[in-house]
Image 1: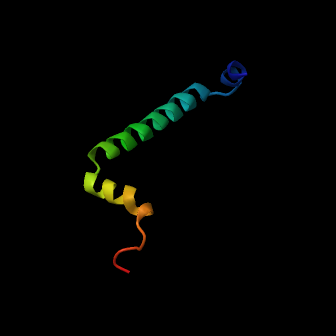
Image 2: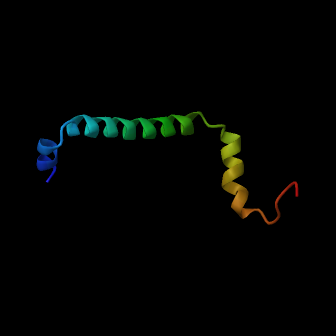
Amino acid sequence: MFKQFIDKVEGADTFMITSFLMFMLFFVLVGLYLLVMDKSYLRKMETLPLEDEPKGV
């Protein structure tokens, strides 16, 4: 199926490579963001659903 698509559509190989690189770039950037994220903010967010009353309201 994919071979027929690549053969019949001009530039399909470029489209597939570009979309794969964009996919990988997105996940690499999300991974880097998670590594440099402020850990105190992360701890605050992970306990937020367990709090009885919202603070500051």
